[in-house]
Amino acid sequence: MVMNKKGLFFWVELIFLVIVLIMIILSFPHSQDGFFANKDFTDMQKLGFSTLQSLDNLGFLENATNPANFTQSNFTALSNYIRSALPNTISANLEYFNGTNCFSESSGALLSICGNVTRTKDTALVEYTYAKLSKPITIRLYLRSILG
Amino acid sequence: MINCRQGQLYIIGAVFVLITLSVLFLFTLFVEFGSQTLPTQSSADFENLQNAVQQRNSWLPTYWYDWTCKNKTVANILSGYTNPVEFDAGINPCVNYIAVFKLSGATRTAITPAYLSTSGCNVTFNATGAALYEIYWNCPFVGLWPTLDGNEISPSKYLAELPAEGLCSHFSKLLPKKNIAFNCSAINNTNTYNYSVSFTATDFAYNGSIT
Image (cartoon, rainbow over all chains, first blue to last red; front, top):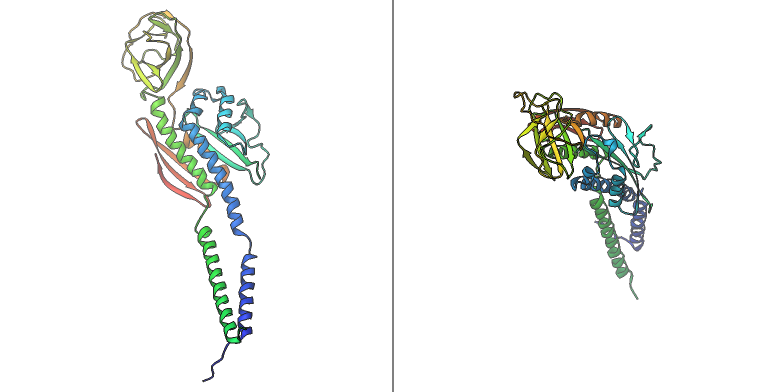
């Protein structure tokens, strides 16, 4: 029986092969980067939702809202509560949706178009339905990290 | 000087080390990220629905005390009044049962007796301090209400109707715009609602009840 002994160059070639394989694997599309980007996006959505939920649970939204007529609510207070509860590193735009029309953040004025907000691909949309009213209102929050 | 056989041993060792590192690298890469899934927009929409149902069901019993009455007036009575106070609470019809409560935060105190004015539909009762007062009316008919005239005041007030379940119609307008098929019905359960929901998106679906 003939023993086929491996020579030095066999192993050198094997090392090169391993190195080349590693380089190929590393040059694959960076799925983990995509994961992190999506995770940042999702985290921002969760942050927005939990922020509004906390304000709701603590009664801030309820206290600033006119229970009989939403358009007569204290929109300055609502806006201040929501913006103050968010980190400074996040820019926010918001509007209110009553199931039919949208209302502005600053005065609760009727908007001709819903979602008329400049949005980039990294703008996260958060919707929180505020149900402690005769007719529920959905708060639409457009969040974007100013850190990029 | 390293002879050829020793050199070969080192290289074999190096190959095994490289292979081990590669396997470890791939293992950590896929174990760390491969097993994690991110929530979708649809699941976020469903979470919003679920939260809204829970919030509303916890709020309704605090907002509306007597579910047999279809309307209420909330009046803010300031100090300086003289009992018994009388004011126009917008009661219509004014032949049915009314109930008056004083609001102190989340606490309600029944004010009895309460009357209607001898003419018209003003409500009359003895206020027990400057506060918000709820007058429930349009309740089941229990007979003519006793009448009494008082000292007329004009508190700021608002009228409200018994809240409907509200969420089915709201989400029926909200979700289809996102290509989510949504069917919903609500059953009254004393002072809350049980929701029966069918929520179907491309990447998330739920069919069942939410309370």
